[in-house]
Image (tube, rainbow, N blue to C red; front, side):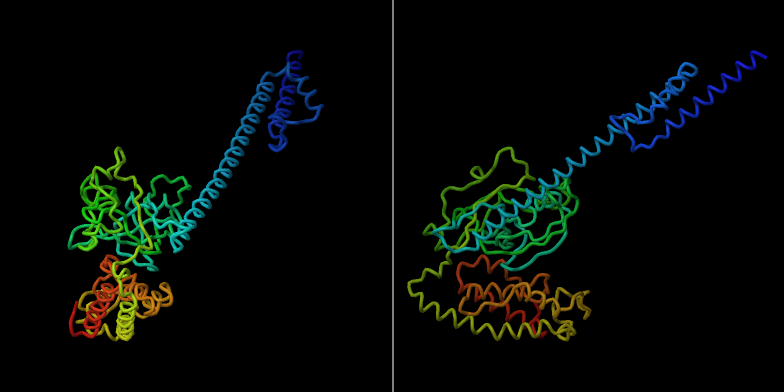
Amino acid sequence: MTKRLVRSRSMTALALALVLTLTAAFVPIGILHHGKSIVGRSSFKTLNVFASSSSSSSETNDDDDDDAKELSRRISQISAAEDAASRAFEKGLLRRARALSSSDEILQSILRTDDDEYPRVYELPVICFDALLPNQHLEGKTRDPTFCRFLRDLGLGGLFVMTSLNTRRRQLRRSGVVTRVELVDADRDGGVENPTEVEFRLAGVKRCRVVGRAVGMKERVGRWRRGYDDDGEESVLGWGVESFCDLNCTTATTGGDDDDGPNDPSDVEVENVPKTEWTLNKIKVDFKDNDEEDDDAEKRSRRVHRVATSLIPLLEKWQSLASDVGTYENTNVVAGIRRKRGQPDLLRDPSRLLRNVLVELGEGPGPEDPTSFAFWACAVVNPLPPLGVAPEMRGAMLEALGVDMRLNILERGIKRSIANLEGTTSL
């Protein structure tokens, strides 16, 4: 009987201890202070009474304290991480704002013509890509790893120079356009070191010229080459020394305003710089064309104005033909927007395409400013996205050293395109 009574009392003590232990275990997590659960004093007294009868209750309390401390530590770590992320985000915004402000300052300087206050020579990276014209927009996506990083590094509002390849000479054109990044979906502060695909929108700002010798000029610039691919399978963007087209004979003989002394690969090669790392080049804006220095400037101005004015009816005729869907029903008309060569179906509505292009280019300058008129008209006839109904003139227009030459190129190009659109002579 005595043994049964002792066993009964012992089991009762264990039961009470278990209840109190479970009660302590389910104290709300939010009621914590320095990692310990807060309970009433009577609870602690009760636990002390039964501590000697069951060691498991003490172990359980120790475990609860450890769990609470661990939980508190994790909460502190999460809070610290969130604070760090917030600070990094704010710093990233500040850096982007400063970079955009800096790019805007350079852009405003480039657009100004006050030589006494603003310099005419700048340092920007140069890429051989396309013969983009002022106010033209180029949109696309790229998976080229170097180009992705380049656009990400420049960021929104970043500036670089876009030039093109003279396919006949197999050399780069020294004349191009200052280009602004209007859209890039890769954030340089976003933590992605190597983006795999980047969507972009680029805008031509102002024509420019890469500074160097008039003859035999070489500079380290970006270009797509198969040699930059480690496997040699496809052309990828890389930086290396490239040859540029010479200026015309007159400029080469006199030295020209771009003749800056010796220039060979050893002068421009940057040691220990990987082919994926871009460098800066000197570029010049607001330079004078050769025919702007004629002695009889007034006589030349009247002649140029007359030629530019004569091109306006040609341009209007071209626009009427190019925007008419009926023009393309003639399968003899060569057009890059055809779904299939020799078929009347089109990939794009030419009328809508040209309307959008005219909106982006803005109101066309008059013949009083023949150089701006020539570039504007060329951007209409060679639009982006392309219609593919005219010979490519943009590179030659940028490379031309005078407004007379530009107007001549424009006139021949429009006439050839009209003949194509009328179905009489294909491109």
